[in-house]
Image (cartoon, rainbow, N blue to C red; front, side, top):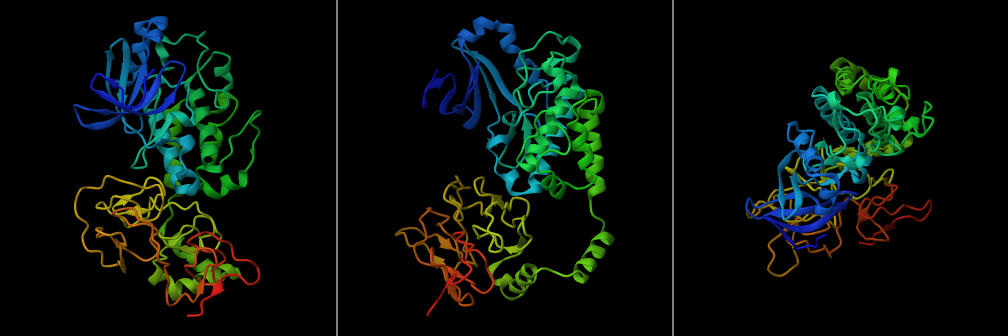
Length: 442
């Protein structure tokens, strides 16, 4: 219907985000308010085919909802025959969100957000009917919110013969037979929760345990597991009756899962007494010697080895899927690599994709910087092992070295420790069993 740069009322269209059977969704700029929003556009032909009242129903439903975990509608109007709704602009949706695959903590936080939004809608008597990862939006602050209530109906006036709802793969059995209930949304939530945690959605006949149950048990606290399992029960009478009951049970389970101080002390004591693997001993020894200097104050979510925010990969297990969103000491987080950045920077120094508008202030002198940007006219400062200048995005050309790391990676030539590391943390190269990293002659 449109192309980038088109004007629709006060909105300037910038990029198409998606297209459905009834509408297009665009990233747009509100030229009056000076902000970027998501714009849902229903064409005149669809409005004529379904009627003005049916097209307006979604806006009438969602405008009544006010909750941080439900996408808010800013404005709805008819413009040149098009029905237009403007909403908050999200970073991505759950189907494309890499953060949940990087960190179990992020995945569990998203699950709690979705449960809270679903409980709010059900408390008002509203069924969603199409809960799926594409309809769960993720915002820059990490918040998850339910969107697309276009297929919703209030329970009091629900038609028992309305069947054009739901998405195969996430639809409850009773909903497939045109008998949706609040428990149908709960079932969709249960499948999404399992898929978010394990990366694999349960499939028919939904026998328990599904595939990757070991991953589920490892990443989900024990009190929370039965709640998520009950949500995904195939029989409706075995599930939670609605999102309200689900949310209450989930919050009680998370409260039970909170570790107590005495429990933490006992666990640490048991850990000291148990025999540790050679890898754990090796990683801990390296952390004591070099961890403070390399800022290895975080733990890899896969192997629990010490890592630094500047590292592309874990030097112990090689995973690249670590998120620092919840633990970084920086005030802002890069939405691409989920590492910390300063508010004055205009680019992420850790990844290729991260570019920002910044707060417009000149960066203060960085006490941890050891080198200046090599681009003429740029006054950017670089901390050790930064890959890009945070001011101009100039790629670091000089090799980063460290006097206490005597070896070099044969691929990137940056300093590594052949004695301790199994992977190069700067380029993720695996060390061969023999003749691995090259020892520097200098």
